[in-house]
Length: 180
Image 1 (cartoon, rainbow, N blue to C red):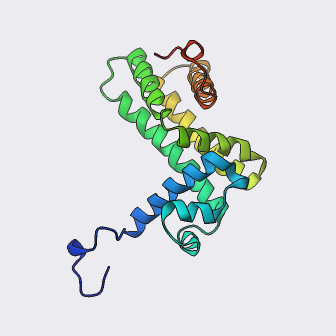
Image 2 (image 1 turned 45 degrees about the vertical axis):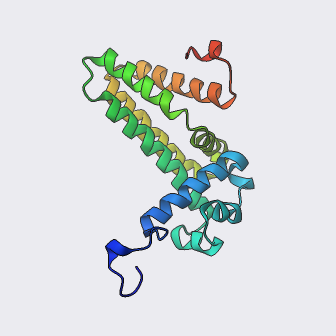
Image 3 (image 1 turned 60 degrees about the horizontal axis):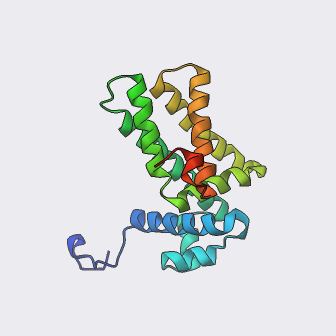
């Protein structure tokens, strides 16, 4: 806040710490999507976010924590989309269909999709694998609870989602995705 200036009169270009953190995550998702974890640089992320590189370290202790933050945010968005889609469903089949449609809409964010796939690819690092695996388990558990099916049905739903991830990432034609 600018000294002596009421909060409501804060300049439009001044973001709160939470807004700045979200802007850095947005920029990081784009950079990690394009370059992957290892090749992405905090300098490029800072440039995309319109901040100085040292400011990234005021928000995240290191690049790995920033990358994990991107993975956690993507996982949360998926779970929130599934929960919202499930509301008002008339039965389990309707709920699963609504969740599938919601997921297809999430896939329209190519940067988030590619960033998420880079999370799986970077799982050779145990410090990345553990939180990415936790995100995956949380999403799987949410799906399993929402579809109220057998473990095989939950795995089939997730498997289809992973197939769609790959098909979208590779920009396969509609005949491979069944979308249209």
